[in-house]
Image: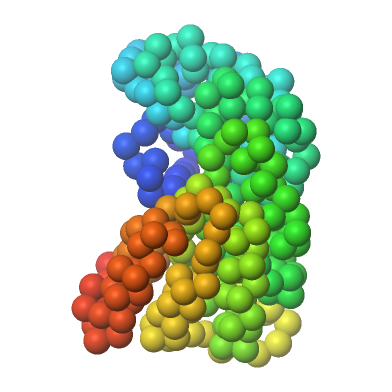
Length: 292
Ligand code: SF4
């Protein structure tokens, strides 16, 4: 029997060539107003037998798979021993396995001790995708993120302490025109104090965010940023980031106006020059190639 997924299925751009195993269905939180990914799904933990069956089917079809992404929206919410059972099964079914990754909310991370996270990392769960979205507390509240800037910073530093890599996401335009400067300044502060290994930008997609009611739940008028204002945010962010550890910066998600890549602070000048070129239209992704 082929591997069947409970659709829709989402994964980070960098997991496009890797095996995906659904350990949970949907998102246990599912309240962020900018995210409609799991809006149609009722959250559930998949029974281990189902997950094991998927692993065995996948291993028979793709025995050399070496990287696995655990879906759906926040597989790290699973109890630590449950995760270990999945990781052990993956390791025995896939002899070439080098790494396992998953999405995680800041709360998922903060609910686990550094020792638990270390144990998971030793069992090859080596990288977590964590949404920062914004470093500004009021923006986070208005989008119902369910996490404070302090909690997000704590989660990133906790994962780092456990030896895990963190790939974090920031959403450009999330504060609209009114909060734009504060959104970016606070995000710079958060990232400089809690540098992830990778930092990606996404761009607010209001059309998709309409489903969970972004505008209605924002609580006051919201003025969306145009592409030039989004480039301003990106420039301000790249200029201000000066993390204690190098951060690999990317804006390769399909929602971005400008696809960029480099390491901060080393490549700051190169990134700023690409942003400056984009103001005259060079390198900008046409709107019809953008997606959520
Ligand atoms: S952004 Fe993440 S935590 Fe928020 S609803 Fe979407 S999947 Fe869940």
